[in-house]
Length: 253
Image (cartoon, rainbow, N blue to C red; front, top):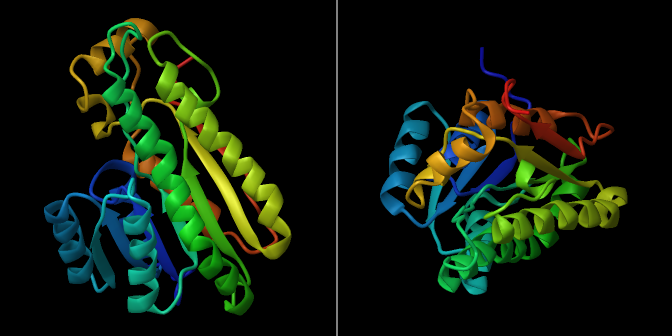
């Protein structure tokens, strides 16, 4: 039976073309939210939107490069223009391009900073006025931002310096925003997954093998596992704020 805990609400999900973002869009739509799907790959977004619409859900495709502050702001405005409000923001877009620091191209470092941190900042900044408004006029009396960090936002590792830096920043910024907005009923939460079956390990050659060499072979989490955690956060009543969730595979130390 479909749960309608998010009926009448609108969620914007970045990184919705694959992985955790895609799974989260499906999960929140199942909870009754209208969903704005944001990523760069239009074909993947349109495929997901078609699947959701066939299930009776409302889905909006927004192809955008969120590393451009104007594009990020436009994505938020398109969502509000189409659906009339914004109650939930899920920042799931990200890349991981690890490697030995002395040979890693600066372009890869820039890309991680741009997508993992700047893109998240730009969307969050644009969304804040709408989230604050939603917290004031929603029957649920609350709005949510969930940022996807990583266990790499909790501990450092060799060859992971810039990815570490971006994820430590996401975790830190989320806590600061939580403190700033919690009394205005906008909840900020961070999720820090361990190794998960997503495209992250396909973004650079040998990254999966490098992870296994460093940390051992583990049974990977599924994107749906992270989506379930996000749904748990955003469907709680206003009085319940889940600040941080760390999710590791059972056999990952």
